[in-house]
Length: 324
Image (cartoon, rainbow, N blue to C red; front, side):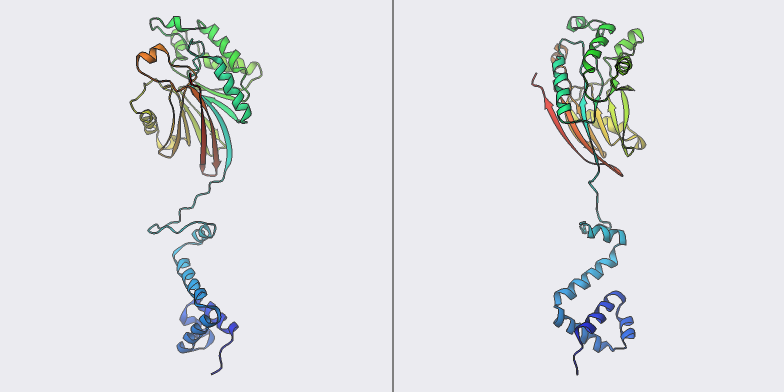
């Protein structure tokens, strides 16, 4: 019996891989015995590895959708026991943010030179904008002895000092106020952070007041960066407070990124799919904090956020400490 040629064998077997045995027998008018002879010849002509690979690909193709097969072809892996292919695109547009918190301007324990050094680093690293997560000013409480811890006494002098400092900002800066700022609200109805922003804008700087205690910044219309302050206290575990903040947010209110001030602590965690940062402070430990055994993490962050079609695709960050 004359051997079938390579091209004929290849044509029959490839047709079988796509259409099955019965249709192959009918289309080529061959018997089952002849077909199996073609299979043996295929191995002889092209090697058994190619045949096995073809069979394996056929079985894979039967299990997945076209979209999933495209994902596999793009580098995805078949995860045993999972019905779907876990493919994520980590591409996106990078946004670089300089994150400040708790500057407490007007306090003996705040050195404006640290803020200026942060601004210099923001210029060097080309941040897109700056955020401030509250307690811009020290304010004036009714706590005994607090007045002796101030470098600038009263609303007018603290605001003037804030204009002097934040007029040096190299980029747009977004503010919320904190509990120290609101002492002026409670005592005199004066919104010092909002007034600071208004005067900076009049002087040609871009300062955006987002509100009391919290405010949202849209990141390319795909997700939200939320600034948070609050009036609660420190927790025994650093992360506990931020975890409770996240728990308090309804599903539809969840941001992609959270910057939290108030506790003067620096750390980051990933909680309920939110990238969370505690923004530290630029006020060294006060006597009040020392008496309460509360540490101050003095410094600032530069945070790179990549935003894709479905939100945050990746995030990297650097903490810049002042050992004060």
